[in-house]
Image (cartoon, rainbow, N blue to C red; front, side, top):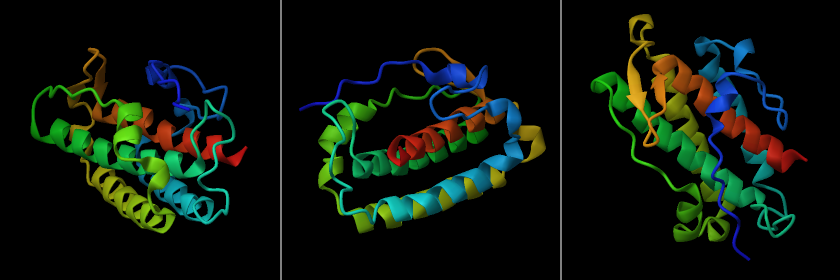
Length: 172
């Protein structure tokens, strides 16, 4: 059964804590993001070793493998978006339909070991990319397809919620 697409605008996580996972962007700094990404990635390795990694808990929820593949792709996409913000003035980000990607790339049919390796690699790449940002680059802007404007700093806070939230999703 197909998953109902998530159409929420999650930018609110920059203004208030997430009641579902507990993430509160006001309690972290930009400098915290690389370590949060690395710790998050390490936890996915264990998740992907579960025997039930491909089992959906219900018809409306992705399996742990699908969530992990999504997080891997989030790491990859946000590295590209960060690079665009650092290279270009006010770049516009293409819309990414995560649900269409999950179907097209057959997330739940991917090899869990390969996803674990790719997720760890993508996490290190994006963590290193955020680590390399100079203080005078934190205010550089980028624009989502819906017009939401981010600075490098707010993009980092918005971005890091996603893998943290999804690890919470598979930890319940």
